[in-house]
Image 1 (tube, rainbow, N blue to C red):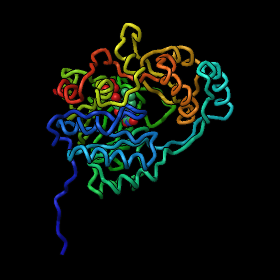
Image 2 (cartoon, rainbow, N blue to C red; image 1 turned 90 degrees about the vertical axis):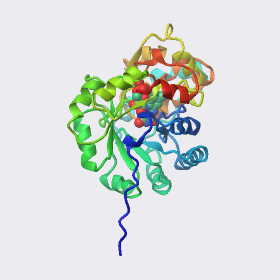
Image 3 (spheres, rainbow, N blue to C red; image 1 turned 60 degrees about the horizontal axis):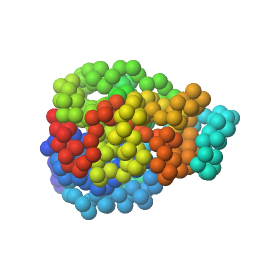
Length: 345
Ligand SMILES: Cc1cc2nc3c(=O)[nH]c(=O)nc-3n(C[C@H](O)[C@H](O)[C@H](O)COP(=O)(O)O)c2cc1C
């Protein structure tokens, strides 16, 4: 006899607060931040990008030790190499003086898959409530296996073509990322231009699809949340707003820069740090290298890693990536719970 079990898959509509703390790789996302947001009625996220499978497992266990509330884990989908050895060497030559300034060598510009298979195994094993992907969508078989484990699968998309591909592959929900967003753009084509259509315009284009839409990009106030829900989103996903949370692992130089809007007066999209489009506070590194940087992720990410780490250690905000969305001027310091409450639509 087969017993029909009601699906226990997490549904975005079940959130007490329709506010998701964006996964933020590179330090800001911590188990404490995810747990605080989830325990507060929103949805916290871990960022597995750049982490090993073992570290990802440990972080999932750490959130579970802090809260029984549902949370998500985000993965970078590996992509093919798009850069030549010559282009890498040429860019490395232009970066040498910057590395010398901090007394470090540039990193090895390797292409890798970010421990993909092992991380998927960890997710299948530990089954967090939600798994989201960015930079592409995985094979339909991976999505099917995650769904089989009861996981709600979210695909990050930046336009209609990507949305249709994600639905075809079996995603349960779409995280719609507008060009206002801080951090990397999730465009499937790493070399592709960022669409000029803003978040609300993209949401309008996707409203007819019968799938829950999460709105991401430039959301730092309750009014921003309300406006996104009014154009069809079921929840908002905010990253920059949580960068200054007490529980976030944001580097001190990054925090200080966000709190200095007179010094860092605007954000821009750059591929000079990682080889892929990302929005951050405009600093000296971007001014010098936006003109000569080729596209090539993750090779350029690895090439600039030691330089960025040394700048962060020296507390020098001009030589590391200061990811931030267009709403950075409205961000505040404080406990994640109060930032979450300030985003309540
Ligand atoms: C510091 C930082 C790191 C990020 N890292 C990731 C990541 O690891 N995975 C991901 O899907 N999105 C990442 N994002 C993008 C967010 O998911 C989200 O799209 C963005 O933060 C929304 O825009 P906002 O920053 O204006 O709120 C990152 C954003 C920031 C600011």
